[in-house]
Image (cartoon, rainbow, N blue to C red; front, side, top):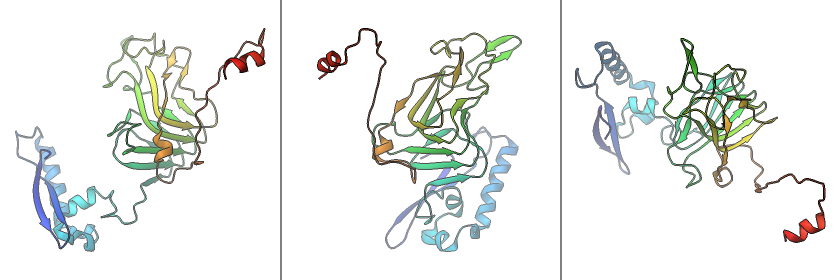
Length: 271
């Protein structure tokens, strides 16, 4: 069990419930200072004293703790209207770890301040999948995690836990998928964030993008080099309520110098 929780079991006629109650252990065992411990205890005591914050028909079932139901509502057991869709009026920034299937739709921009990872790796059993819909743009943020920054005239990298930006998910935007402030300056590309001679590392989408124009995450040596991979779960188990055609065909093309090119010879050779 995770540290800082007190487990207890309760039952009803058909189910067994494991209840994890928050326990803020006194100093110095937790590393919390006095203000943090007081704030945590106040929060726990508030929810324990106000069980009616949760629907009584749910809070009373099997003696389930009201605090747990308030902080963990992403389940049809406790939220029968759950559609696994989050709607945002305006812009939103998203990063972190995705467990399950979810779609996020925003009427503004969707900003990416750091990596988005699945608990279960993409292209495996489709246990996790993210869909993002933006009516404006999806932008990788120019911040101290994603980009080099100048400290006393010295360009610095390494504040991020990884040198590259990885985004698991499918991104549909009525604008473009782009990088923020590609005009720089970022200074010369520095290891470990030198990817393809770009200053901010690689940008890797494991999923897919649907956009108005061409993805623009670099300009010259400023920005993120693109290394994207398709996730077959986009067809096998797409994000909730995500617009799809129901059809997917792998396709690739390459350019041929027309000088001296004979289409009949090429066709016969590639049969």
